Length: 293
Ligand code: SAM
Image 1 (cartoon, rainbow, N blue to C red):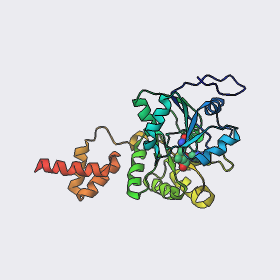
Image 2: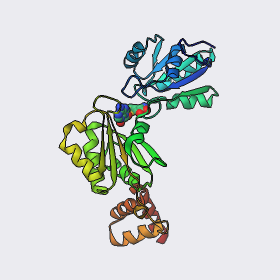
Image 3: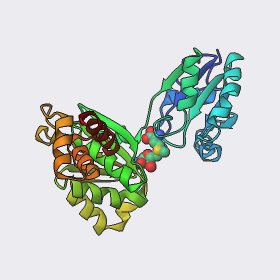
Image 4: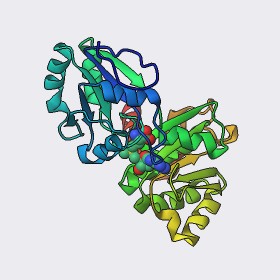
């Protein structure tokens, strides 16, 4: 096994293994001694954007061959990577920021390597979702991470309606150009729900806004700087009374609403109350109607 160079004791690296290495989400100091040792000791570093990662590696005096691995070439690269591992190489995977695979490339590769019995080793570190949770002041005993909100307005509404039905804290990533729309939707659907918007974490303009959906929307509308940079949005959990009751039979609800409203509207209302996809309920309503004919 190759030895990584460092003044600290460094464990020998596995050969024929892929190390999944977390890198900083802003502050360059947020990288572990072990991550640096693994990067130094790897025979190649697979990087989402080699030019971007070069800056981090140069900062730490690490000079290893870089191979690009991003969402558009990742599947084609799997065979080659498997050959390198079979030849006894030690590989490291990094993304532009934070933990690879978390809203970042790497999943097809890791899934393929797990399937083919290769060793995959985590080197944990920065992650924007967990960093945001750690300072949000929202419950952390149960949370769900849902990645980026869908771009299309209809899909985004359904996505947020589902999150709003969850009783733990929901964590999502959002693009600056869509944050106002997302906050406005949340303020419409659940104006009093606690939200936290964590922006530019670990960087110079780090800001954490807290308040009800309505208040966070107003804070962002009042200061255009709050729409800049990278951001994590956290949504406080639903109170039990906001939850669809277990005693409500979804079919009964659908049929009752369908007696009062046109079918698509009935499915939409039921979707909102049950936190289930409107399309799914619409199809279910059509099936129920077929059954009763
Ligand atoms: N793999 C990364 C991780 O572990 O967090 C996430 C990569 S994803 C492509 C990039 C998104 O993560 C950004 O759009 C933003 O939502 C969030 N993010 C990354 N760095 C951040 C930071 N410093 N502050 C707030 N959010 C950040």
